[in-house]
Amino acid sequence: MKPRKTGAYSPNMKPKFQAVAGFILLLIPYISFSADLSIQPPPGSLDKFYSERGKTSEWIEQMRQINKTFGAVFIDMDREDWGKALQSGKDFGLAYQKASKMVPEWKDLFDLDAAELFIASIQSQDAEKTVQLSKKLGETCSHCHQKYNISVWARYHWPSTQTIKVLDPIDEKEVEYNPFMHRLSSSFRNISIHFDQQKYNESWKAIDIFSKRLRGLRSVCSKCHVTEWSKNSTTVKDYFVGDDMIDALQEIKKSFASGSPDTKLFQKNMEYISKRSCKMCHLIHQPPAIIQRAWSENP
Image 1 (cartoon, rainbow, N blue to C red):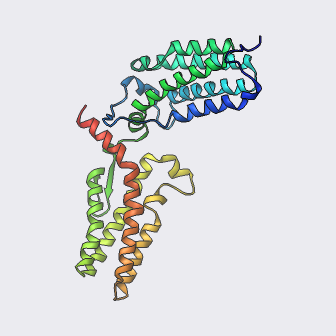
Image 2 (cartoon, rainbow, N blue to C red):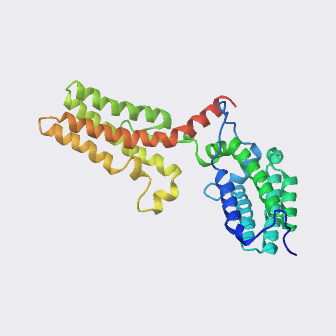
């Protein structure tokens, strides 16, 4: 069967379809949000697909199947292999339909009629109609991602700090994560307070306290980053609580020991720790923690 003349495929249009498919797929993660964005918890029926920590979710695997089969349609069209394009379209339809049944609360976010028409347009080799329907289907993906991507990440990909306890090396007592972080922050701040007051012995002691607590924080990283901690040569602790932080503190202590504390060196090293350890870690970990806390306080 030859392609229909209206909206038909031709060799001159070859690059078009892969480009269109790529454009639609690239748009899916880059979604716009309204000014009154509200991040609601994902439905409870999704929990079963994320029950085994460390294993790729069955839901994610299904999303990948949708993505792959959708893109394959346009690759096959570029090759003028309408038979394979139809098979890819049917595979997409099955994957899309299966996903629509996995989370009952989300079934209305799927446009099954558009999926059927998409397959029919491939069967009739109506390239123009196929592209139109692919955009409509892409919008259903974007709409769902806009509503739920962030909440799914916050619930399933970021373990709650509320379950974490840390051994404070100063009093050798186990405390919850949040109180420990307050103690860590206070001990870091005390270094500068004593330095500004020219109480260098007290500042030295504060450095020792902060150093011990910073090292103690490394155990927290391993509670979530198990694989990275045990298998990689460069582990997660090297990013925020690495030896470079301890070295910066040691430089300050050497300045104290010289008898002439160097204010510029002190400020430089304290700023290094503040930005490279505290700030960078907070930028990554605090947003999901704030979302989780809001959900727990307003169920």
